[in-house]
Amino acid sequence: MALDPLSDARSAALGATLDLRAPRSLGERVAGALLATAAAVSVLTTIGIVAVLVREAAAFFAEVSPAQFLLDTEWTPLFADKHFGIWPLVAGTLLTTGIAIAVALPLGLLAAIYLSELASDRVRRWVKPALELLAGVPTVVYGYFALSVITPGLQRFVPGLAGFNALGAGVAMGIMILPIIASLSEDALYAVPANLREGAYALGATKLGTVFRVIVPAAASGIGAAAILGVARAVGETMIVAIAAGQQPRLTLDPRVPVETMTAYIAQVSLGDTPHGTLEYRTIFAVGLALFLLTLALNVLSHRLRRRLKGAAA
Image 1: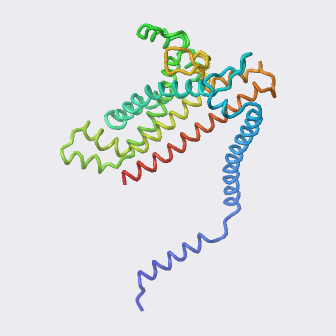
Image 2 (image 1 turned 90 degrees about the horizontal axis):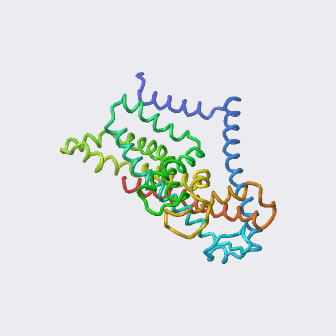
Image 3 (image 1 turned 120 degrees about the horizontal axis):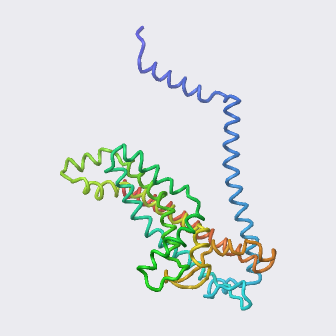
């Protein structure tokens, strides 16, 4: 009797399925246990950080009302006349972050477009690693670069720019996060299917028209995620703002004056001059909790942005 090829194929597939259900070897079980442990460690670490922040912040709010924390417009917990309004630190953080993303996003996106669509393979092999080297520069170097190079250069063109200011620190932070946005955006552009490019060229589109009307919109989810990741990195930056921004908490959107960010204040109090367990010391946990919630909001925004853009592209 002749053999049925379809039956043979079904039998082979059934045998493969039975083989997959066979007991795993000792090495596979060990590898699975190690991977599960690594995942559990990351989750437990996050839970531990949140638990410490909530516990210490609760002790802070037992002495300072949330209304004072959220409604006061001054932040002077280390002074004799104490005020605990968080908004000067939030304003300094958002101001320097806004300057950083205003510098890094257009430059990073243009660099990504050049590397992905216009540069030759030889240029791409040299320029992309050189650009990513900026990510390896210590942030303290960026801080002193902002203080000694960027700010004196800006003072020639910006009247009234103080020696310590949000503008110079924000520009330095923008240079710092430039490799993140450029690299991730370039990967997103490079991953756009070739048939979209070929279809645009077949319809008579130019090179630049294809880039800005087809490729960039198709990679919008990856570019948006890169921008949000760059913002989150700038929000958590400490050394640049601690060195170049001035450490003077004030509720302002003027980039020419000194400001203080949430991370810079935490670094200032953590130097050891403030006694452990005091109200002044617990302020760093209240600020840390606010910073954690801000970063969490950025991550949620990034996730929803990617889902929305992917849905629109589909």
